[in-house]
Amino acid sequence: MAEGAESGQAVRLVGPAALAFAASFVPAAADAQQVPISLAPGEVLLKVEARGSHVSAPDVMRMTVGTVTIGRTAREATNANNEVAAKIIAAARALEVERRDVQTSSLSVDPQMDDEKADREGRAPRITGYVARNTLELRIRDLARAPEMIDALFEAGANSVRGPIFSLADPRPAEREARRKAVAAAREQAETYADALGMRIVRVLQLSEASETAFMGSNSLPNVGALSASVESGVLQTGVTVNVDYAMVPR
Image 1 (cartoon, rainbow, N blue to C red):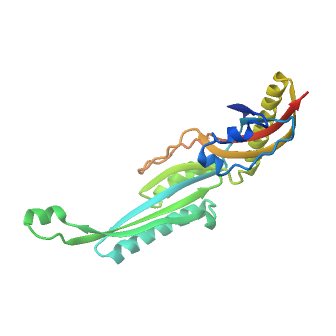
Image 2 (image 1 turned 90 degrees about the vertical axis):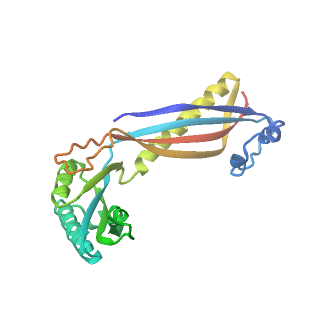
């Protein structure tokens, strides 16, 4: 597991007399969210942007499982689909997937039409049967059992398995670490500028942040009935970017 922090590119110095003038050049979208800054006599505004990151191993994998069945009537197609879905859910429960981690994400029943035959015969298309589709979303919390889970799903009658999407069950610890690193990087950057200018940091005026989580690894699962799938969980990089406004005074 690796961790890191990196400095941003944006640094601005604004004195008290130029503060109102400089604010007029802030884009409208950013200006709408900006809190007015008040500098004391002799203070200079230093605006710093910095980023911190933390790398974690994911502990949740989400994937979608699809079933498609055909019947002469809508009820027949739906009943057949329900039977397959029940087998898939039972297979997931047998591998200790909790009820809260199984969710229907889409369900549809559509008619099949004999369009090509109707065109040849010069008549209106007729319904020849029905197609029922059901998509389940599963969350796997024991990633070591993911290949076994995929095999079991296909054996239970799944037509497709798609994903994975990896995440953290509780992202807050990673966010806290990334946040600490971002703030530390911003402070280090600010002190470097202050020292080079013969000044010192006296207070923080305001702070804002943006965060993101990026997956670093392979995101492939088979979408046909191939068994013994290989699943690599990779790592997740949680990043936080902070914009900090400091007040400086001469040393």
